[in-house]
Image (cartoon, rainbow, N blue to C red):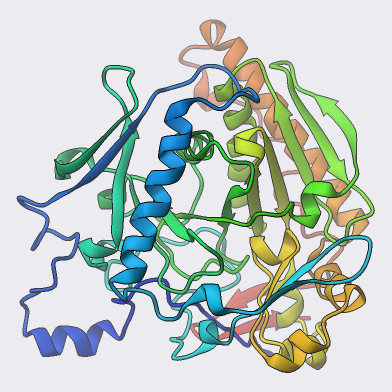
Length: 441
């Protein structure tokens, strides 16, 4: 039978509109100072260069980190004064929900206005980039705060007016015009390469560097895969400041394993969403690789997931989820669907962005827990996914250690045992069309 999924996408750019109508009005010309080939030649944007770090960041924050915190806030407030945001997020009501978890609720009625339909299938984590759909090369240059790249001389520097090298495809930090909190921005790795929304090692390490450079434990980065409520299929991370701990950061954990490179993996317990926590490692690269390899495994096996980068890049939460799948199967109550809350990384972390005043006024720990429990994989399914993630991480690590012995044998790697069997136990396969999911039962 055909089961519809209700979607509530988010507008992140002032240029996120019907591209067909927009192109017809322009008659083939641009004239809006975008990041595409028509406008990028000769363009100049601010540039922030960071120093590559080998080690996991410590507790002492340097002057450069304090400066970067000030810089991002200054640039963000400048765009707010220029009227580039769709609403004033500082005027949104916010409260801590009574209870031991300390879930937070925000009434943000502006985020669900004038939405466009999601433009990709919700049941496939990996989908090719489509330049005809909205993507971040179509934003105006005024929405970009700065280019973000590694320093060539090992020094942290800021250049207010640097040329854009289209050949090197710079990474950029841009505003989210529908902010959830102060300083809400988008990190878009190698923007001109037009990468689809999928994690790779290089891009994930860049996100960790941004967390380090912010140098503030209240500045977190988040990632949503397709199928886990990413709304644009162009690789990006989100980030913002929230001056209280997220409930997920306070949740108890139990250690599961330590990889050979020193990365410790724990799992959440006594929290409504099952997930893994990565920390430690002999180097920053080790930590980054462990998480990105786990994400790559989930991507390749079509498992939607969310990632939270916390504690200045020292703790990373990986959260496989199945809410969209449950929607397609008709397993989510109409009461939860009517809230129009799509539980992505911020909601899963405990910051509930609510779109109806009724839901805000009636917000309770019980209601928040009930919603997030629907997001989580079952215990049995999570254990299976967890075991395969560990195997993927260990296999990748072992391969790296032995690569000098196996050069030229890459095509002979044995497949991971159990790969592709994640969905066993669910008596269904999801096949999606443009607007609907077809569930074969």
